[in-house]
Figure (cartoon, rainbow, N blue to C red):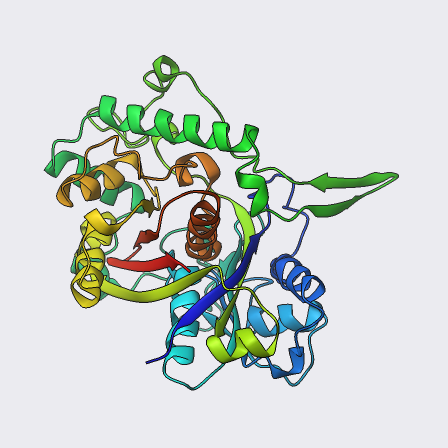
Length: 400
């Protein structure tokens, strides 16, 4: 099996729901980092690009009809270059990176761009076709997040709880207090704010020029979901599911927009196209868990990958864990034997602070971990996340 390298990794800033990126179609949004990579490496013989793989969780609106293929054409790549969109819900962007790495490792490809995109602001309303003739009772759903067109048998099996309920299940089953969740969330916000202010995050972000009517373009270049709410204020927020529960808007990830793209290459492609390898992709694993506690997915995915690679968490210098909810993050870290405040966890903040554009997030984790390794002394990073309907995904990268 051959070595696989990440040679560059870029992303847009993460936009808030209805925020700066909300005027940009998801296919245009996905094209932004693709175009940046194409312009940044004029020496690459781009017609030799084997594939473009993009994660996207929704695919019900402007991201339909294979957003990866549409985005590469919008970004000015040759019509001869194929593209595919991967949907593993929250893990889609990471799956795209891992799938690209597997193809190259197996010798079936040399050079692939992988990434992810999601415009949750522009996710459409969707309507079911009527079951009977002349029906006047349309079923309509908001496709931004969560279940729609529910299979009644899945519902009877108990697998269709809301994402918030699955996080609450973990909090109650494992005795994770509201105070601990809020403390973890404040820590995430604090780290992200520091990384934004000291310029660490800027290395992975490419600015987006957003046209404005009768005004100069808005240059959008910083994540806008961050909100450094005081810890005591977090404690006053109402629980979403009501009295006796603990999940709030302050200890959950956001609803966001963004796109990311990474150049994945074999050693031969690195030499042929004059690239500089940054990190080596060691492997990716996925695992299934009960949908009712989907947030625990990172645990079996991580253990599976560590066993496969012959490594342990002690060999990891960075732990990029997607913070879907503070409750599920703490459930996972405690199950994995980590301290709540292990300094390796999300050193530049996580999804509670930075946001969670579903199809982009996995690619964002790998992008952020790559830049952390390049700016620091660490050697290896674990990237892992939970996935709706009960899955987990994990990837390990290593500095070259």
